[in-house]
Image: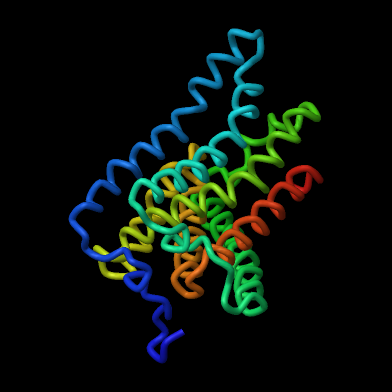
Length: 241
């Protein structure tokens, strides 16, 4: 980190400068989002036609979104004629430090979740931010799909897209912390979750954006995302919440 506390990596050094031809990145980014986040509708139709229910459809689509985000980011980056390192897909320069930062962020967001619960409780609102996922515990198949989606596909796919493609492009066109905030807001809104979960999601996304720019790699945000989701799923499966 620089002496003034700013993230130390400048993504402008990764070849993402103001080449007018790369203005098509926005169209590509929207296309990736549309394919990934609208895919559950298609999956839902297929599952329902096959005789499944809405919960099964949601479970089946959970890992698909992450897979499409990851593959879509690779496709968009290639279309922009950029190396994957330009969106953070590179080995960390300091893996031990970056791993510790990732763990710290994963632990910190647990505290944020707790504070969010206290605020919601004080306001008389529901504090059950994991409610939409409880139905996934009704069968081994649903539970496996939840684990694959939340602990494997989401950390890679969502980080490659939101902290990779989007944040990298925003960072060369906006002030640094504005870029982090905009990417975080889009990440939060893209989650079809309860409104009570949006505050911690937004804070978590800010932390992940800071990690990306602090370390110059997607390694730390992917690891932090994986740790956080793994903890959440473990608590959910254990019936502790």
